[in-house]
Image (tube, rainbow, N blue to C red; front, side, top):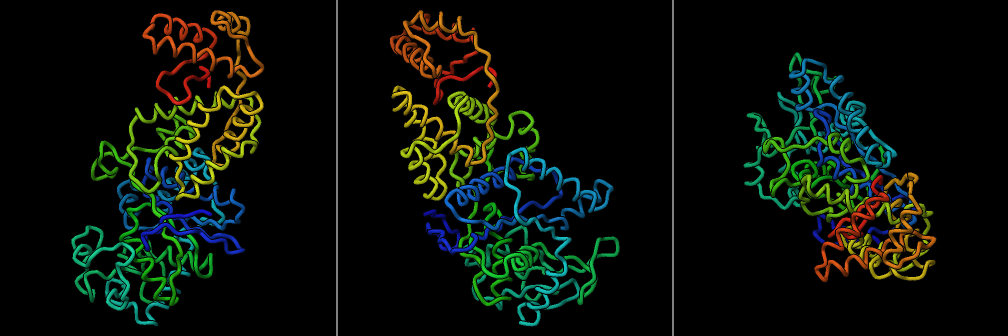
Length: 464
């Protein structure tokens, strides 16, 4: 069964089948600016997770929110001289287009903050009634001193909280660490009516309210980027457990950040990379494959060079399975996939063992090779990749002539013949007969086949 690393317990834990749908909530975007490559990673790695759980035979209830009112959104809309609604609608569409281009599943629920105000007010009222929250001039605040388990999720100390940059210090708060549930708005800011004055919700309360409204209690998996562990998820946990007297999440699951030359991607570093640029240049499949190569919990280094590597390797996979019907026919490969994914979504392990399996079996009998390719295509489709079998135009006579030069016949599966050709060429390379190896490479190029030395699969069709 699937095991996931739980940020709260810091252990691998089995996601138990409940007999009903697995309930999953993913913290979605704050729509103040265009999606960057880090947003793409979070969306894709948890799309892998949702798809795999469905493949495992479980039903899923999946929610991903949209924060469309927030201090940053207000600031950005003023900067652009448009309303917060205009900004939110434009950026929300950019995120949706990016998710679609990456072939991410549409959530069963996609609540917006501005559409959940009533539920937030109701939850805040409950926290005030239970004396976990208090009202002051600037708004309503959660009193962290009333919640004994505060900071257990993030493992921080109160000194670290106070030294952080995301904690607002209001003069009239009871404790410096207390966080806003409701903010009284200024005259020129968007606002909603509430029992405590016209204002807007704090950032953290929306997810607690949405989860309670959609799932009516405990959820199985709460996920998001590890930059959300504190303060967002820490405060979310404090609100929800205080209001409803129980832990509301079984598994807290977080993905690692994108790094550029070892530095975390952030606006302050000036290294944010917009997602659309890379989708336009590489396509959704290549980006999905790039994210598949890394352990989802660890930081992932990002560069054009690494994207080009992903592009070349994925094109080789496309070539390998070209013209093959997707089907689960190779039980050994299926076992590699299941064992890897059950091990905390270990996608790099799956890829490494898959390529070893391909190399080990590439000279097997025709039925075995076809079954292997069918299974590879099936498993990649399970992971959300889309294959369009574009017709390859091959000069069969020329290819036959080129292969005959090495005493190779064209077989019904042309991939087998080409792999034999490449094996002979590799012998020349190993013997340092580079002129012959280069000649063989150039000959294949004449029929639209590109050999890529040093790559896992070795070759691809030019028009892949």
